Amino acid sequence: MQSLLLESRKDILFLKNPSNFSENCQGFIDKLEQIIKEQPQNKNSAVTTASDIYLDLHSFLTNWVLRKYVETGSLTQAAIDKEIDTIHAFITKYGDAEKLEHIKDEAKQIAESNIKEMCELELSNKLFTYWGHDYCSGLTHSLRRGARFVTSNPAKINAFRKDFPAIWAGFVEEIKTNNPDISLEKLISYLFLKVVAVSARDLYPIYEASNGKYGFACIQVNPKNWKNADKMIEEIEFWNEEFKKELNTETPNIVYKIPAVSAAVKTVESIVEKGIRVCLTLNFTYNQHDIFSDLIEKGKQHGFVVLMSGFLDDNIDKELASLGIENSKMYSRHAGEAVIRKSYANLRAKGCKNTSIMSAAIRGEWTIKNSITDNADAPMYFTTVTDKILEFDSEKRDLSSVVDAVVPDEIMSVLKKSPIFNAAYEEDSLTLDNVDEYPPLLMVLDIFTKAYIELEDSLK
Image 1 (cartoon, rainbow, N blue to C red):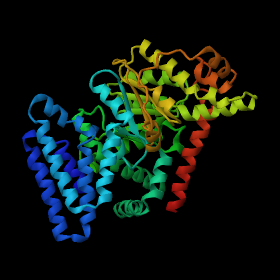
Image 2: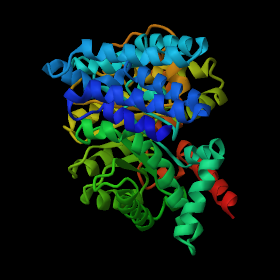
Image 3: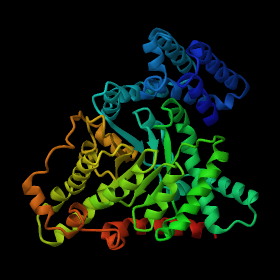
């Protein structure tokens, strides 16, 4: 049913000709009726697929194409509402009370979502913050609330392996069949590609609707090669060509994640020169942002410098606690906030047009809040998991921008007792010559590397 859902989304939510909307909706219902008639054992799956499209039509997904048709007069909201009622009638006919209650509750939650509201404020040019889904599956919940991209890393890929063993085994068998003498490293590289391609296909209609600005999926290089620029270049070039085949397009909707370390300078220069989009991960400091934004600006594609806010805050919390500071967590949660605000001001002052900050490792609503901006010339991005979105949507939130606000002196004075914070915040305190020894970077790199090794062990 997944293929039918993707096909139906293209025909109904991302259709090319608005005059075909009602016809496409009726064709969708006819297909489901035929499935129930010929395959009665799949009735529940057919109802679930109808429910998915019904909820899609109550979500942010309508803003990509349908809203524009309504605004230009080529489609009416009344026509959309009529087809929504028809789909609901199908669900009522074949579904049970539990299914009907589910779609009612989910439609209500979507309508009341703070994150969705934040995204809709961008449509009226009031906010310019964009967010992404930080995992390789479960994307629908996020898309309905305005998510525009997907991120992944070795740990996320390893989690996919555990969560979907049958799909993973199918990927392994397919790759080995097509490449009998494949090395372990190349096998894993192919597996990364296969997993990320799942999300990339879901996102491609958004990629097309936004002319390539949004709707991308991020894939991260082998963490074992973090000191080898040539190996990172080789893997990205390999992926870029293979994604064209895998996704059947010359313009794959992929962004390549590279660690923001000394070896990455050569890697980023090479990849940006080829017109390929990049995202610098393992970023914790003002200096890393400053250096790699200069490299991204030399290219023509929009790229990202990540700030792994949560991991930075975690490390500073431990350091402050070791110094005997009470309520260390209350202070440390402002660390990533302070670094982002300083870096954001710097990128704006430099006139960066192709580089945006992407906040990651979200720990709470305050990290999301710190990514909200009303500056059209300097949009901000963040990526997080569904649980954090549910937390942010659990109560009404103030969506005003605070990225230009000054972190209070009493908080900064405590944060500056932390050498880890000073290295992240102060200009020239940490350079690419010694960032390889920075504790937060080594901690996250260790997480990525252990996940990669676990993948290796599972395939031996």
